[in-house]
Amino acid sequence: MRFKNFTLLFLMGIFGLFSTNLLAQQDASIDPADIRFWIGEGENQVVFIVNWNEPDTALAWGYRFNEEAVTVKDMMLQISDADHRFGFVGESFVSDVTFNNGVLNLSLAGEWWMYNVNGEMATEYFNVQLIHNGDYVKFGDESCGTLIDPENYIYVWEKPVAAVYPLAEEATIDPSEILYWIGQGANKAIFAVNWNEPDTALAWGYRFDGESVVVKDIMDAIAGEDKRFAYETGGYGVSNITFNEADLHLTLAGMYWLYNVNGSMAGAGFDTQTVSNGDFIKWGDESCATEIAQCTYVWTKEVTPVDVYSGVVENQSNTLAIYPNPAVTEAFVTVEDPGVRHIAIYDMQGRLVNMMSVNAMAGEQVRISAATLNAGVYFVSMSSDSCMKTAKLVVR
Image (cartoon, rainbow, N blue to C red):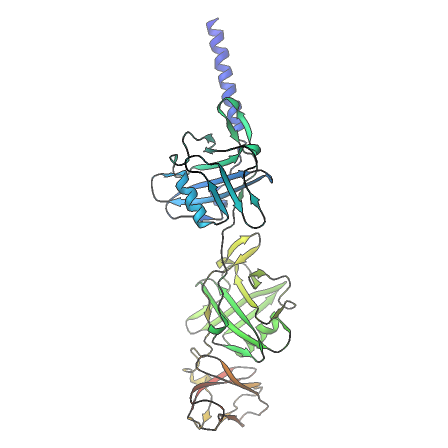
């Protein structure tokens, strides 16, 4: 009888253990490789998950550290410091955990919060509970959990876990910092491009008179005047954007290009998307972007204004013949290439001070007026269908 009772108890224990483990396996998790938002630095890492109800939601962050162990509270404090959407209430016992991104507004829907470490109910308050490399910490509102052990209040949460997208603010640039303005008019837009390998963001300015302008027209104007810049099309849009100057050769490093207008994903193709005065257009190689929502990217690299004259003046093959130089009231530029479209004059800050259309044959001289220019150094740029040539002009 004792043997039978022992066997029965043993089998019941095994069945109970098997049953508990089976239920525990329903506690949804997430692979660290799928985490999008890692907070902290170090060789050790922990996955932190929170479950809410109304709506039923499970979100996950990653936390990195160098110490042998950290407390759950310290991890949550650092996450809340890095992600303003996340917050919690409590000193030793958590009374609420919140998340508000402007769309989701998550808070306690049941009666209390509890948490597991590696699928088992934590044995300490969160301000003293230690966690180690590879651990999973999972908080849950009991109203969206499954009670698997009523005697010990052990719950699991079965909602599939979604990785939280990181916060990122798209880097921009003030129009006053732009050095190279292309086109003429009272309205203006900024055009920027991000590349990877090396991580680089460059910006041009574009002026126009109409109420709006198509993004492609801006890019065509920049490519027509700045021979360092070019783009290619293929398939459904832009397949590559390049910039070549001296030792800087930028091209696609990731898989594709995409672009934002005023920080939001453009709603139309670049050949139909219109922009207005004050708009900011930003192309990016996705490999150097931060994905902040599904298929929504921002580029955080500091934007550098393009210096239109960098590496051009020193290249004699691209230098204009201009005389007299210094000039007082006028100077003459010799047209060397057919197809010259216009001559532009810029000050030392890259601001356009004068532009004139040109209809002249190769070898002809074109007069430019210096009478209205203040004394100083200027740059004269002549653009043709095949190249752009530049020269310094000193006005006295």
